[in-house]
Image (cartoon, rainbow, N blue to C red):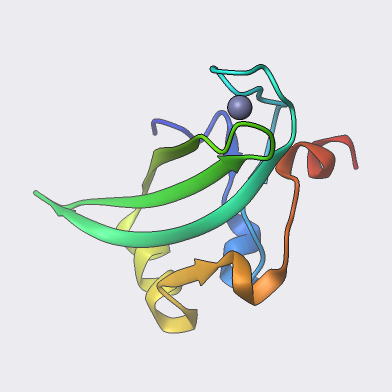
Length: 101
Ligand SMILES: [Zn+2]
């Protein structure tokens, strides 16, 4: 499933931001301060589901979206808790800092 090599999405079912499995840097300015912005699940069609994970560079403000593949079961689990998680709900989280822990 595309994106799962980079993202552990399990925390999102408990209202926490998804966890990066490896550090990423901004493709524009090279900063490693990458904030979680929001994540939301959706049905793509043809029996396929996605979790859009949106992050923002803490230096140049570039916003990037990862379209991570999820299963129907995961999507349903997400819809039961909350289909959309906002940074406002959890504060500013530098996702790269979470990798080191
Ligand atoms: Zn940047």
